[in-house]
Image: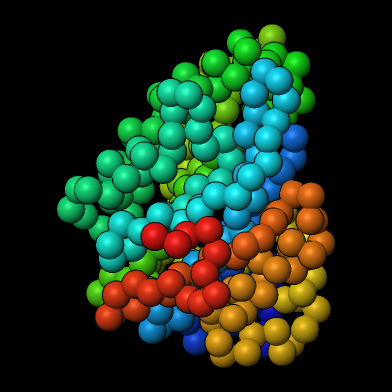
Length: 266
């Protein structure tokens, strides 16, 4: 496999016949806990896989549990990583409201971005007010603090939209604004639809090493390969990424969950 590199955060490309997208996203819950979210696309289908570990912050510390990170919206799915919720904010619920409208995946991402920006800022203000020291350690004006991916099939080919939310702090370290970045595929997110590429965010070192270190990493079984990438991150960082693993495949016939099932048992 012929490879090249493109730096957008961390981005690695490899030349094949159609985009194969692998996205690893970090989940910030205040102590570095990470989410691994993998998306693999071919001309026939798109596969999404995630781990299930979540870490919720409270005034008394934090609790670790398991949760489903992939939400079905019929013909497509969405998944979030980062500061995803507090008592008044829930990224999945807002994405669900956006998903009820009729439109393309790119349009859903745009609506979700517009609906989420101000509520997300209010959540970050609550976080700073309640836990200022922890906020100062975990939230800077560099990098995304919430990432949501929409993935499915449109016009017979994989479609993907990524929404990133970046917190802007004032000189004293208080959140004052939130900026968004939207990438779509097919479109500028793909760069060139004739090339495969995989973008890696956050907890990415083990996944990058595994793929770039082997010319035979891809087996042709995309569900198996996506699951393997999540498992690699679990093995590398078990305190930050954890089982069980959920895998969903979407093609022109619809959506199906791939066995063995994880936390997404609905």
